[in-house]
Amino acid sequence: MSSALLQVRQLSKSFGGVLAVSDVSFDVPVGRATSLIGPNGAGKTTIFNLITGALQADSGTVAMNGRNISGLRPSEVAKVGISRTFQDLRLFLHMTVADNVLSSFQGQDGERPWAVLLRPRRVFRQEKAFRSRALEIVKRVGLIGRANELVGNLSYAEQKLVVIARSIAMEAPLWLLDEPTSGLDTPAVIQMLKQIRSLVSEGQTVLIVEHNLRVVRDISDWILFMSDGRLRAQGTPDDILSSPELRQLYLGASTTHG
Image (cartoon, rainbow, N blue to C red):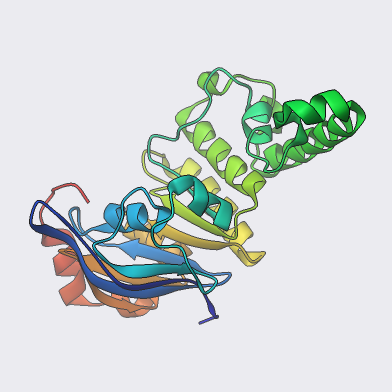
């Protein structure tokens, strides 16, 4: 395992007396794909919310590159370098594919009114460079033929690729991917896995919540297994997915929200 980019230590969170996450600690190593798995109700979504600041922990810490980010707001966590995707995608449906990707670049001078007024040439050059880069990213995820299409006109599988393209544009060191292959047919799953594996091979760090165990085995370098709010085990795909006890916990647990 590589050195840790994200460090979670003794994280706990309860709702109305119900312990959703209990004393959870783990590392996410640099340049690897780590999967967070477990039955519905295990606490996986709560972990994502605690890491990104959508929820505040009752106790414990989250650190990024050794910096304690506990207590930061979601916008502040994003600036630290954590990008999160959601199952509901959260795309701009009435904008084109290219413009969705373009909007994800950080530090655009065109977003500052004073820069537009005082440095119009610089703003123009930067926007031209960003648009060129956006098209490169759109091509990378296989959507160059749809670059000028409204996102709302795309298939669900294509929209999920736009989400990946937007994450690339953000250049965040860490991605939190929430069920990236859910709702996809087999060819679309293969395409999504190809994109993620390619990026990880280039050094991207990802933490993935995924229910499809075949996908988990195929994409993971390391697996974190949760059940009932606790981290029950961690290890390689062979270690975790070959365990009869863990498979029984995974397949035989409740179907409440996770």
